[in-house]
Image 1 (spheres, rainbow, N blue to C red):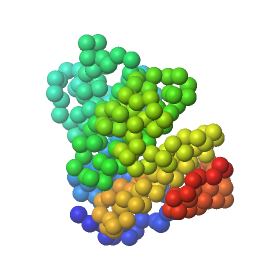
Image 2 (spheres, helix red, strand yellow):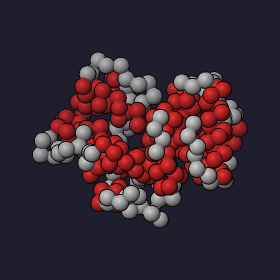
Image 3 (cartoon, one colour):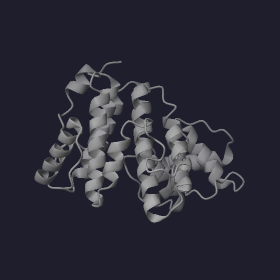
Image 4 (cartoon, rainbow, N blue to C red):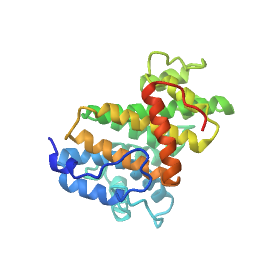
Length: 277
C-alpha cells in the first residue's frame, strides 16, 4: 500500500536537525490513524521497544510512571498481567507473543534463563519476534541493529574482561559466531558488511561522540535501504526511526550537531575513516 499524501505531508528532516517541531508521541498517533491495520502493527513493533522497558518498570513498581511512547498503558498492563497469570495461552491485541513467553519464564523458576539479566532476556525475545516480520525492510533493520549492538557489546566485554557469551543477545549467525570467537574481528569477516566501520567507531574514546557516530551510521543505512521506497510504508517507518535518533541529538547545539553530522555522513559516503572529533 502506498501513502502518497501522508509521506508528502511529512516535514523534511536532515541529520543535522537538532531542533524540529515534530513530537514523536503525536507523530505516532497520527500515523496509526492513517496506516492500514497491518502497517500499523509494523509501527507498533518499533515502539514495542518502549513497552519492554515499561513492562520491566511496571513489574518493579506498578505505580511508576511509564514512557508514553509505549503501546501499552499502566491500566493495560494491569489487565494483561492478570490475564497472563490466569490463562495458559491468552489472546489480546496488545499482547505480542514474546511478552507472554517472557512473563512465563520469569514466573517459573524451572523456565528461568540463568546468568542472563531480565533486560537482556526480554531484548532477545523482542529481536526474535522482530526477525519473524514479513516486512523485509523492518526485518533487515532489526538484524542490522542486533549485529551492531552485539559487536559493540563484545568489544566492551573484551576490553573489560567480561564474558561475552552471556552478554551477547540473540541467536542469529552473527551472535553465534561472536560467542565462539576470540579473534579481533570475532570471525565476522565477510559476514557483516559494516564490520570495519563498527570496529573503527568502537575505538572512539568519547562516549557521546561514539554514540553519535553509531547514529550517523544507522541514518546512512536507512537512507540506503529506502532509496527506492518513495511512498511505501518503509519510508514511513524509516522516517520514524530518524525522528527517534534526532531526539537523541537535541542535547547538542544545532551548530555543533550540524557540523559533526555533516562531517560524519560525508565520511560515510566517501568510504573514508572517521577522524577523531
